[in-house]
Image (cartoon, rainbow, N blue to C red; front, side, top):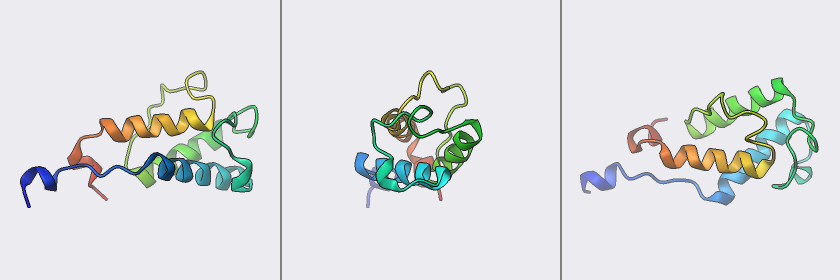
Length: 102
């Protein structure tokens, strides 16, 4: 196995990221997963408040081994799709060594 193969990132698919985000939101908000759709508004449709947002962020950070920036506020992440896109951007920008850490 080459050194580059050892350090190559294996990222989850968009569908996998979306499912984890939906599950985290559904658990936090005590909603059925089928009520959480990509186009659902986090605050307006799902009722996500600041404490819920903190809990979801922690769950996603632990699941994906990423750090979600505090500066990505409600004006930047309005829907479930926005949150999925943010997680994907963080996964793609993370160094390979960190992506493989558990």
